[in-house]
Length: 330
Ligand code: SAM
Ligand code: SF4
Figure 1 (cartoon, rainbow, N blue to C red):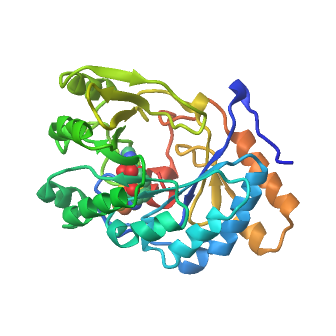
Figure 2 (cartoon, rainbow, N blue to C red):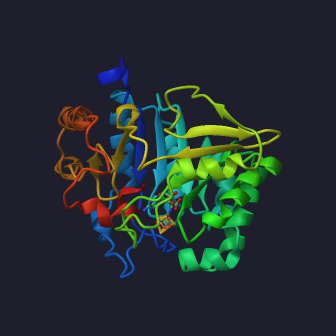
């Protein structure tokens, strides 16, 4: 029988974010530092079979949902076969994917056939020139076609993650929200976090209250309530007459540590209990040394126990995560 993890507030840690690579084909200004990052040597990145082993163990500890992320997960060779293997793990209810969409047109059918239940596409502008300014690559059309292809492949819902940044795309918040009137997309506005890239100050930060205020001006904005405990921390809304939804994730302004149900496995094989805490547990080394499952399960237990309600982004002090969004996976 699987061991369920009940922590304070009956919170179950049932969601694992798996960063399968630190490589990326875009250079979003808020994610990657301007000077670039040193990629991990290939030998330091978890092999697929190692990830499968760790996911199987984490299912024994109550994980029910795995999200593939990165870097850009679709740039890693063999990711479709890996997705198929994940889909066969007994006890895992959901496999989801977060992608920048650049390779989505090419892979959407395979991703669907591989058993991915839902996808999130990150897209911060609907204007090709601005997309280029934010990401350093002229790929807006490619991403947009990827989203259309995902729709054809009947992914539902398709979530579009928009990092809201003052002076960069705040004038498009209403355009993104209006998209939900025509399309069944779930647009999710995310507060920019002081991690990676050029956002070590909070000057460009837009709180979700402000985003809410802008969207409220477009029509009747009705709240939707959480359905199950695999739902994320987004506050969800629908505009009257809308086909899609609007979500707002106050990663900075709302303290949702007490409902956070996530563990993270970094591309280099470290378990992180909190995005904003540098405490990591190296599971790759003992795995490669041939330690048995009981020892590895102990490490997972320790990571789960390590989750508390007090870490949070605003905790003072220097932190490694400030430069590492692409290897942690968001
Ligand atoms: N490359 C994929 C993508 O962009 O969707 C997956 C990895 S990316 C690190 C995961 C998510 O983190 C994306 O939605 C991205 O917008 C978000 N992200 C990255 N840096 C961020 C930051 N500083 N603040 C808020 N969100 C950030
Ligand atoms: Fe790459 Fe995603 Fe980071 Fe953009 S947000 S640089 S697409 S990892």
